Image (cartoon, rainbow, N blue to C red; front, top):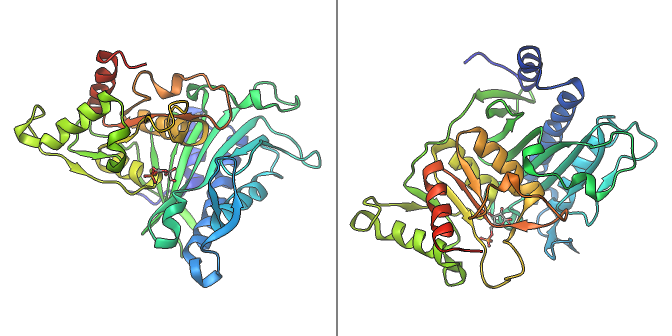
Amino acid sequence: MKKVSLTRYLVEEQREHNTIPAELRLLIEVVARACKAISNNVNKGALAGILGSAGTGNVQGEMQQKLDVIANEVLLEANEWGGHLAAMASEEMDSFYETPNRYPKGEYLLMFDPLDGSSNIDVNVSIGTIFSVLHMPQPGQTVTEKDFLQPGTKQVAAGYAVYGPQTTLVLTVGNGVQVFTLDREAGSFVQTASNIRIPEDTKEFAINMSNMRHWAPPVKRYIDECLAGSEGPRGKDFNMRWIASMVADVHRILTRGGIFMYPWDKREPGKAGKLRLMYEANPMSFLVEQAGGASTNGLQRIMEIQPDALHQRVAVIMGSKNEVERVTRYHHEAGQS
Ligand code: P6P
């Protein structure tokens, strides 16, 4: 594969498919540079005294890690001055952050989970940054939360960086899924895979099994069948993986197939699920669908859900198409509401 930098990919994609206007290209390059800076911080870890709790909580009611706060700051500072954004929203912030009046406002909205999988930071397990890009409905107007509340089908770009053995950026602008690996010597992301595809079938499922007693029947039925293996109704043995870092689990699925599930459970019946729709489920769903996979909340395509709140949560079932369709079918058969 010829060495194609992220910048060259974006320029050539714009030239050939007109999918990446200059402002969007700038946005993606700025986010990529911010992910490089976050990667450098993550890699320092204890050496820089940035592990452990920040001693503050976020809107999710979660204890923030020092690196959560650092990653959030890096993304805000990198993006606020470029003139490509009207506003940003983050898992770590109660409300959105409008581009300050001292800078020009752009036509895009950027949402992100600055550091997903924080419980893995102190134990040196892969974590990542997830981002989603929407058009500002009325550029130039004062931004309101309502401007963010667009279904996932309206995303113009989505991606994540996974900070693992390699630092990898996975991106879609609606024309397939492209993978870039950080070349630390050159300090740039280089394309290492193009138009990746998720196998429609799999033998690998990802779910937190300790929640089994809380699941709705269709999820229990599906997992029981996987556990029954070749002697059971599926006629094949399954393997299980759970990294407790959505970015790492979804990256594995984009790389070799699988199904990722964080379903609704009865502990918090009022909450649709644990994961957040706008900056976790929607961007990951865009990537998964662009790679030939499927993504539902058990009943409907996640990207068709009309959001009603910035931090709303959603049940997530995504990955290999035939497996996601099976779980979704089980929900419909159960008349699961
Ligand atoms: P549990 C990380 O906190 C996260 O939001 C996702 O990245 C991950 O898939 C999930 O929560 C893990 O949740 O309940 O297994 O710790």
